[in-house]
Length: 238
Ligand SMILES: [Zn+2]
Image (cartoon, rainbow, N blue to C red; front, top):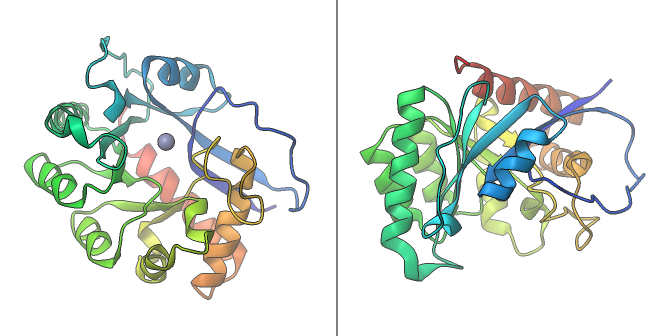
């Protein structure tokens, strides 16, 4: 049976009504935190794969230390100048603090980056880390720079959106051993389900679309993305 790994889902999630327009498959997924609430629901989520951290919206919030025992990754963390350009300096400080933590713990990171290409690369050059660039929405030059730094590139439903030509361009050249798929549910439902609440199962549509874009078949593409997800997460000591 086909297996797919959604590397990025948030909880709690009411998931809406399930769509039945894809065949049955085995689903693995990573529950991702980013705030006290999201971290708590990620811990409770029905999956062994979890990431906990403080995202760009937590710069002014109280941040309790996180117990990383048995947790696979630090995330999501990162920079967003689309929604929060005013907190740039504090976002960078928080991002670098958690990159350092991940490096000290020898765990992978899950990185959000939006309209912050230059500062993201600056932070990643200051503090070496490994892991995932989640829901990649940048262009070819940014993608190549992140690949050069050793990161995995994860695509969400955005790659299926009509206006995302630059994202599709990158998805054609990311090497087979560096690509991942995700939903970012409950957000970003892929075409043909765009506009509905997203569910981890809908990673099927993201993977099918990318397999077509890369000129491969779904079985082979699914197998390599599962292998990539497991090797990214399971190389960390727990
Ligand atoms: Zn997210």
